[in-house]
Length: 213
Image 1 (cartoon, rainbow, N blue to C red):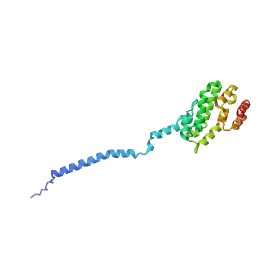
Image 2: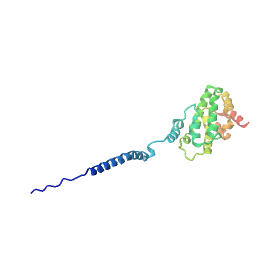
Image 3: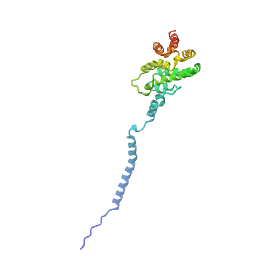
């Protein structure tokens, strides 16, 4: 007599419960997928991208105008110095640098062709002297230290770009446009630079009279 195993019995109710369980699990899995994707995006470090504000600050500080100021352009003072140090309207970047840069540009017609060339090169020299401060290469910069360094660079930039070789008419125009007493923190330092520079005797005597009287 052969024995046969009974066939397993699965009720329709059990099948329905199994199907319902599968559907519920699939639904839960699908609903969690967007959350996982969003979580993975949020968890990514911010170093992988620059947000708009950071991008704006970075591009401003490292832009070419700050590392290599263009000739005949005054934007360096506001975009590269004032934007970082906030010295105010009376501070050096706006109150002196930008002010006299724009004043020279507006009144360049008073200068001869040589005088205008001197003016452009001198204004460029004054800006390049402050590139380390503009790019953050110099640490611990304050408005006072920035102003001190800027004024100390004036005499050298003026003289080394050919101030002494300009005609008398240009010297008179420079005094009229800029007012040397305003631009030089120390008139003694300016006169000493003129005195030490070869070929500057006439300029020394001229500006000596203007600075004293």
